[in-house]
Length: 193
Image (cartoon, rainbow, N blue to C red; front, side, top):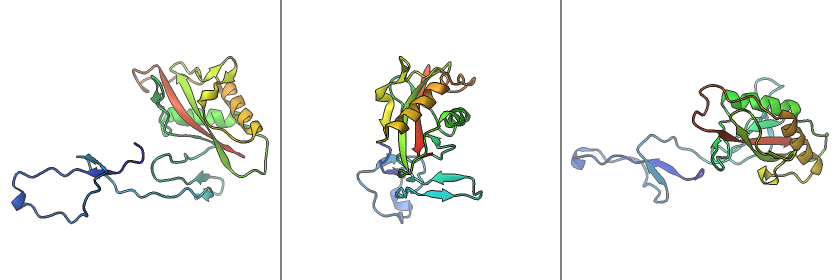
């Protein structure tokens, strides 16, 4: 659904003979129609390279323009759009709470240095309203929580140590995701950091 083509569905006028014809190309029959305006999007290929911003100390990873974009990382950790698994809702990566937990995870993420090519370990972290990390079972991160693992066992252990050291997280702020008891954050850990 993330990569579905979406086009604006134009309402049919009551008197079509009084309306000028549209200058747009024929719509794609496989696209989804909506009555809301849609910005045209084109796919951008993930380069895998760090792009520098205005400040030399800030770098971001450039991903695709839609679908599963690589989130901006702070200290090697980025918060994606969320998984929405089970009863929980996806945790917005751009929210204030998302930025807070991103900082906590990045402080606790200390992988050993490596000359390995840059890669990501992606974990779906279930967080209860009171801040408990529900993905931790018996002192370990549940195997099913890892969406993407590293080939390096040390990198996977560094991610697990970060999650265990961060448990519990701060509780949800008042008014944040009202009516839900848990949320799922898609957390991206860059290795090497």
